[in-house]
Length: 282
Image (cartoon, rainbow, N blue to C red; front, side, top):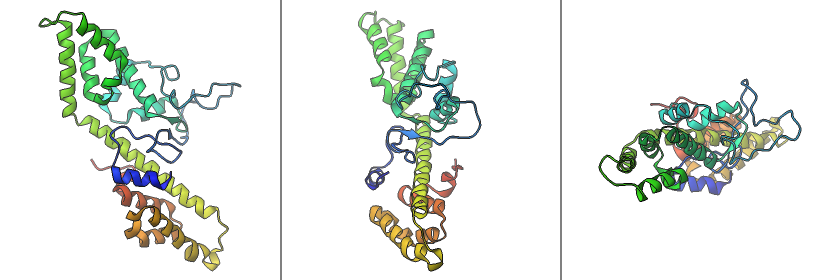
């Protein structure tokens, strides 16, 4: 992850939409990559033992063709309940954490889940929920646009008609969205997850810089020569770290790369130790 991206994030704040990464340690760009977790069933997307297995692009990872929507209502409930981020639920279903994915692949699946729920019932409450939980997707959802078009152009606008109930569902959905805390909670959860990935990225970078050199520790090459240089480089790229230079030097001298990375993320984005370690305060 280059310094300009980090500075851009610091100056402009968290994105309004789901943050997604561009590289292995970066959760702030377009393609998230997760590390493999132990156990679990084999992923349908993992390198297959079959020869010539299809390579799945990051835009297709969550598509129903790759990961079938077995229970549309259950997925809708998980999306809205948000005890865990929806993408985390899908990654668990895939049984892998080593794949990249884009926000497009996630949002396309969200659209499809609601479409299936609506088409099975024609219940306008499904649309109400979709608008309330995903107002940012409403104007970029072809099936919803088609439903609204079909029922507003050709149908009687009389009181109690399906057309009227549909438009009321849209209106109520936007009203709910205006005061809905769930979207903020989900946004916060993904933002925190992105900072953890950034911390891991920084830790990997610092650890790699140490391992790449053949330092004579007895002569203090790492501690006396390389650490000050590394800290100066970090401060030059990210001036907000200037006040943390002393602590950064201590962590790097002791080769405590994770602690150094955690300090960097805290200084740049204000995410505290407890949150980064996976115990966010409620």
